Length: 338
Ligand code: MG
Image 1: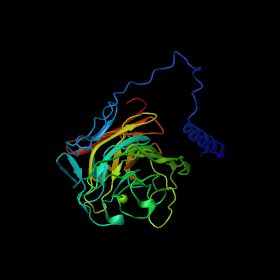
Image 2 (image 1 turned 45 degrees about the vertical axis):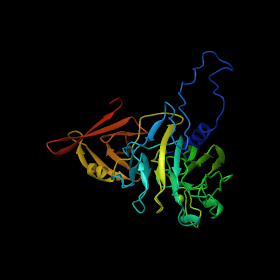
Image 3 (image 1 turned 90 degrees about the horizontal axis):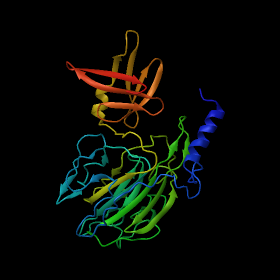
Image 4 (image 1 turned 180 degrees about the vertical axis):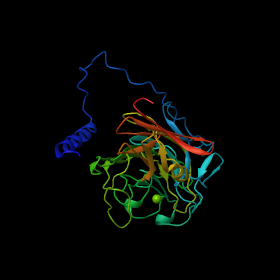
């Protein structure tokens, strides 16, 4: 069990990791310091033509297919592509990325229906969610459409109205450039640092590093509840056929192995007991947020998916790979280098 001092040290280490201070390893103007990575910045979009993403971006939608997206349970989405544009099919549910992301720069372009229908929250409503379905940046046709300020376009819904209304007329392509800092939680589930968000709407600063009070909620102020640092990004179905194009993301900070939230059906299929050796078994169970637990040797590990068959723990160098032999699932565990 962790001592209070160990918990406190962990808290301080996690919190100080988020503070931007010059790295004491390097002298001022140190010529040995590694050069910044070269990135081809791509091109800006016009109304007629989506731009080209930066060379190090992960492209989430480029007009060709929805291969990076799924319904929230991981099954195929019912959203459609029309003329190279991704469109919400009303009442078909949210869509989410297959891959999970923590701190990131996200670029999203969207267009509300033209001619517009409805008013207030009923007009061109969608949303960009971080943390799976937890933290909404509002998408709404706010062009001459009055609604409550903290629910208008580019609001951190229910918390922070945008600093300006930078909307173009309905049907035009709106651009969001977002810097997302995920909240951090300790091993004990306590909040270590809150989520932060900076947003440019059509190049205009509309959210300046605001600190989220907790997950998005309606009519109440919900508290944070622990979840993994990396989670899928989702787009909201609020019953309006909002369109999206040119979606890309750049992961920030410490890079590690990729992480995915697998479909519920796949995760359910892995649940069971697998022989490890003559005396021990690996017990595989579901955990919240698309994770599995592997229990062996009397220890439970929280396992993240690296691919549809490979899992890894963040706390210990444990990995597991599922395979199938004669119609029967097998699990190979390795501790240390696989
Ligand atoms: Mg919304």
